[in-house]
Amino acid sequence: MKKIFHIYILGLMLVFTSCDGFLEQFPHDAISDENVLETEKDAQVLLNGIYARFKSGSSYGRYLTNLPDIMTDAALASTGFTNQMGAMYAWNITPGGSEITGIWNNHYFGIANANILLGGIDQLEGNEDNLNRMKGEALIARALFHYNLVRLFGSAYNSETADEDPGVPYMLAHEIGEPKRHTVAEVYTNIINDLSDAIAIMSDSPKVDHLYFTSHFANGLLARVYMDMRDYDNAIIHASEVIEKSGCSLEEGSAFEDMWLLDTGREIIWKVAYSADDYGASIGYNYFNRNDIENGKPQPDYIPADWLLNLYNQSEDIRFSAYYIETETDWGWTGYLVNKYPTNPLFDQQGVNM
Image 1: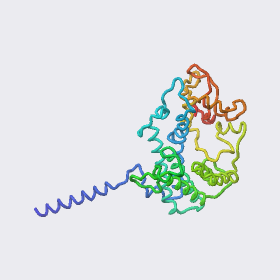
Image 2 (image 1 turned 180 degrees about the horizontal axis):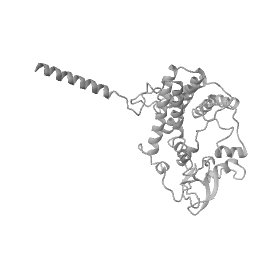
Image 3 (image 1 turned 135 degrees about the vertical axis):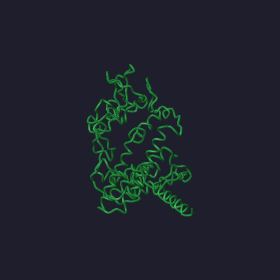
Image 4 (image 1 turned 180 degrees about the vertical axis):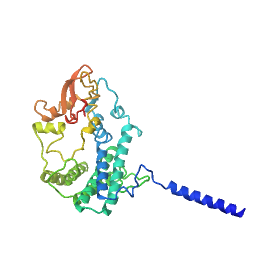
């Protein structure tokens, strides 16, 4: 009987030991944080994923481009309004709204990836200049993600109250938990630190690669951050760095229009890397919507307010002809529509307006 009991106990020990090992197995369709960053090539793949977050409809692919316009009196709902982004247009904002959760989740996923890269890149072997480039780009991405978040979910920067005003959690490491909400001052300080650290380690090439963050872009973003803070002296310093060293210059005439149509131009410091495969992102879908393929007439959700149109010298200002177009709509009226985001003709596969 004692022998049987010992065999039974031994069997239980094997079962529990086996189960413990089984439960510790990592999912077959995922990679652990410890293994995701082992080579220089892994770092570039992870960095590409960070850039993809900016293409999302929850970033510049739609919400960050459209919401700042439709939530002001610059845009009006048109006849035939389909109520897309209607809650935000009406300022009927709820925490669980798709736009709110989409922006929040997309940005913090991007921040998590940036922190994974930044947490492991110093241990990698490879070309030092290339590793510093990727580290700098990740720092800039982390700063830009947080900058977008604090402007949307935090208080506007006010030097007298920034030390107390609620901002957003500024994540400096990849960790699971319930991070505290930093003050606006803390968020802006961290943004400046990340951008300054990036500039310090990135080569200052006069040639701008429009698809990737550079020290020139970091200086441009710093200028904008300091403008928000009303620190105009520092804003001038960093803006001057861009003007004098980036190789960028302002476009005029048809070259200005080509920036919006063909995505080219000397004025571009950085652009989201859309391709023909991304044509369905439809950045301008709600402004110049071609739902009626049969007659090709647009069905816009939002139209520009008259007061905005009247600010331009419509016959001479190149911005007016680049941003707006007068056309007949499928709703039976003719008027000006926002045409600021036309589909690049190289991407337009089905007449879908981006």
